[in-house]
Structure formats: structure tokens, C-alpha cells
Length: 418
Image (cartoon, rainbow, N blue to C red; front, side, top):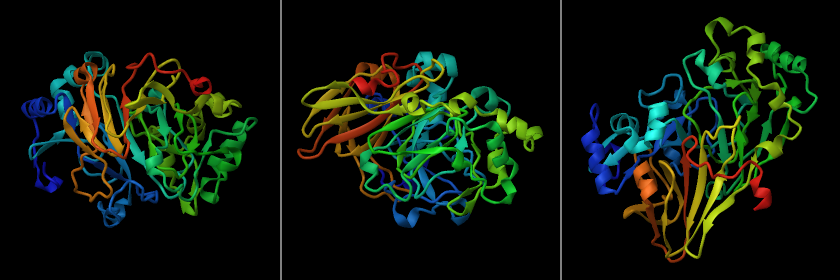
């Protein structure tokens, strides 16, 4: 395997033959290259294992790299972005080609016939986002709202992997919604006074202390200001948002980011902007009970433990789910899943269907790693054989799934009875 993306030839257009060769070699698995994404309005948290010299690899004007995307066929909606920003590449025998093109060419043989028939694509993705401080209080539009700007809505979820959180950085707390009793008039004033200084929207909200090994399920139209833990974030394949907080740690947030995904004829319409919130959900007095997640064991034995880390439904629909698999030192286990999945190794070393796995300690911007791969639906259903080649350290992997793939996943609050 090449050690740098610079050594690879890029295959474009018809990638069917290349993809089939990769699937044959790795028994239904596709090795993926790291996919880095910068955000100009945030400060990187330095826990992605990216080399410090490469934090600004896209250039200072693009901002620092604070995200790594997994199994993504979704473009990052950044200003001045690279043409392939946010898109994962498959790596095989000195070549690379986009996962999105593989899905387009092979359809149901990759993502499963059910997902392919309904969506015609891989409709979800996940990422690590990693920041030194908090993100502005913001929301993601619903499917109906996002359709007004030819985009898709964005439900999302969080899990805070202990392996990527040796430190909580500057503010390991997340604000959600508003305090019960908050009025729409109070929130409206925060928008009306945008250009007059800090709009103090967080004074209307309350923070939750973030703990490694836990998570949250966040529907569209709910305001949230994520804290500074490094976060694994399974979500719908969209990058829509509206920033409702105008000053964060002394940094100003432009009005343009409030209305980034608002139709042009409503970008100054405060009534329309306010209508994007699900008001009852934002002032829910039982918000934590309805959104907080702790792991729930699915299967376990002397060789492994497989836990649900993202579960629950949004308006009755399972948009995504996720698990954490731990294979004990020297252990070997066959894991069968209901559908395609994207996997990231967060600890240890070993093999998946004989393909080498190794969690890196430090990654250069152009490095090709052995920690990320995509499992096709046929391979997932047949069963992937995971082996831990270490005699001392756990092999730990996170994997997420598409919509309605796991009808047996726990319901919200199941951790209380685990």
C-alpha cells in the first residue's frame, strides 16, 4: 500500500472495474483515505491526530482543520472549498477513486437494495469534529426547510469517544435549546440586535456537562452550541445550518452564517428566520430525558463487546444508528450487520476480513492510514471477521449505519434499564 495520497493515480469516470477489484481483494471491504475538512470560523482542538504542521494545510484563509469525515459522499458546504472537499476516497493498489462514484456505479451492491431504491445514494455520513472551544448556538434545517434552497435537512447525533478526549479543552459543555418559559419575543430580540454587540442568546439556554463515553440525539430545528469534546457525529448527508449566536469567545459571527440556508427573499425576514425553530422541542422541560444517550450492550463474550452508542428515533424515523465494537487482546469475532456501514478504528491494531487495521498515533495531511474502511451490505450480512493482533491492547472501532437499517436498536432512554 502507498503511504501518501500524492503517490496515487486518481481514477475518474467509470470506476466499476477498480471498485470490483478492491472488493474482491478485501472480501467486500473498501479501504478509505482520511478526509479532512477545515472551518474558517472555529479553532481546531488538536485531537484528530493530524500533525500540528498540517492544521492549516488548506491555507490560512480557509481556517484550521477541525473535522475528519468518514464514509462521506456528501460535499462540505464551505466557501472557497476544494471541488472534492468532504468526499471520501477509496484506495486500492496505487489508485484512488471517490466512494460516491463507487456507489453510483454499483448501487445496491454497495449500500443495499433498499437504500438504493429509496435514496439512490449513501444518504448519511459521520465525522469527528474537534474544537478548542464551543461552537455558536445554531440549528439545522428540516427536510422541508432545506428543500427551499435545494438542500436536505440534517438530523445528527453525538458520541464522545474516550480515546479522542484525553482533555476536554476549553468548554466541555453543550447548550441545548432554551430554558423552559423562554418567550419567542426574547429570542426575537437576540436576532433584532445582531449588529449591536453580543446578542446573549446563551442567557436564554442552559448547558449540559459533556462526558466521554456518552452522547446525544439532536433533531433538526433545535438550537445547540456544541462544547469542546472531540465528537463522533453520525448524521444525515447534508451540511445545512444557521448560526444564531453572533459572538463566541470574542469572535464575531456574520449575519451571512445565520441565513446561509435561508431563501434569498427571506434573508432579512426575522419572522421567517424565527419560524425555522421547533419551538416546543427547544423549550422541552424533559430535554435530557428525550435526547441523552449512554451505551447499551448488544452482544458480548470473552472475545468482544458490541455496544449501541447512537440509537432512538426522530418523529418516528430511524435516520441513522451507530455501534462501538471492542475486540479483546488476541480475540477474534465475526460480526454480522443488517446493512452497509462505515468504520473508523480508534484504538489498537488487527484485521478485518484479513485487511490490516492500525490506529495511527500521528497523521500527516497526505498520509494514507489503515484505520478507516467501508463495509458493503453483502459483506455486512455475510459477516466481517475482526481479529485483534495485540496481546495487550483492545481493538476498538466505531461504525454507523443508514436509515431504518437496525429496527432492533434500543429506544431512547434504554440505557436506564441496561
